[in-house]
Length: 57
Image 1: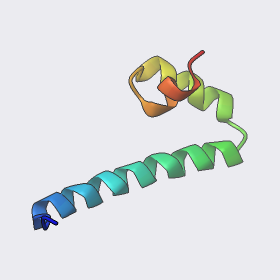
Image 2 (image 1 turned 60 degrees about the horizontal axis):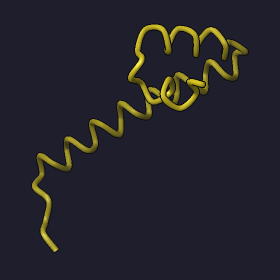
Image 3 (image 1 turned 90 degrees about the vertical axis):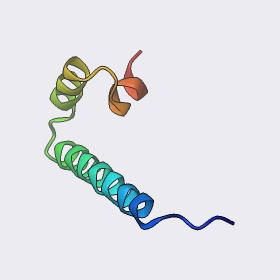
Image 4 (image 1 turned 180 degrees about the vertical axis):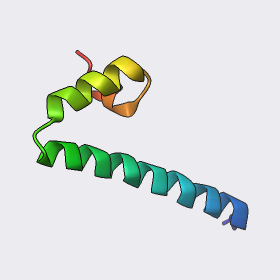
């Protein structure tokens, strides 16, 4: 098995941190009862986002 370089590991950590921030935002909005406005905003501003692709009919 090939060992990963430290730069690859650091890149994966950065990506994971960004994803955690996105998930925290989604959770906070769900808990605050602002789910609809979040999806409307997310889908209208970023059509390639995972949330748009997941929930687009």
